[in-house]
Length: 236
Image 1 (cartoon, helix red, strand yellow):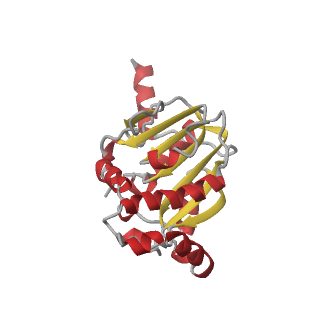
Image 2: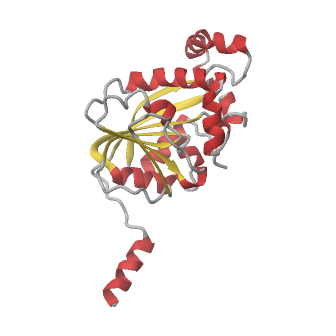
Image 3: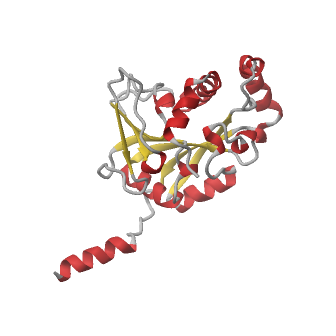
C-alpha cells in the first residue's frame, strides 16, 4: 500500500522526519554533488531531498504518483510540482538528465511499468538514483514512517528489477541505521549511530540506495495495448 502524500508530508515536518531527511540528504549529495545546469525529476515524495540541487539545477520538478494523492512544494519555491499516473509520465522522451525516486518505487502499483517510464523520459546518458526501504532494516516494518509502506527490497532484488527494466546498477549505498523512534536521545545521537552502523552492521541500514544508468543497447518492447491501438487506427 502506498504511503499517503499528506501523511508523508506531515512526517517530514516532525523532528524525526527532519533528522531522517538530513541523514539521507548527506548520502544523496555525496553521490550527486553538483547538478548545475541539469534537468532533474523527482518521483514519489522528493521535495525534502530535491532542495539539495534545486537552486542550481536548470529545471527541477517534483512528481507525485496519483495513487499517493496531491502534494506540493513548500511555499515560496520557484520550482514545479505535478501529479500523474506512474506509468504515464507527462513528459516527452529523453527529457531529464537525472531522476530521483524516493517513496516511489516501493509504492508503485507496477514497479516494472514505472521503470519503463523512467527509462523513456531519462536521457541516454542520464542517471537514476533510487531509495527504497531495506528488507533487513527496521524502517521497512514501522508503519508510522513512510518507509514502512509498500514493498521493501534487498540490494539483489533491486539490481534484478533494474536489469529487467533495462538499467545497469553502477553504485550502491545505504542510510538510516538510526532506529525509527521519536525519542529525543535517539534523534540527537543519530549522526553517531549512522557512523557506527555503517561500520558494524552495514546490512541493517533502513534504506538501500542504488544509482543506475540506462542500458542504451537494449530495445524497449512496445506494450501490447499500444500496438493494438495503432493497428485499429490504421484500419480506420
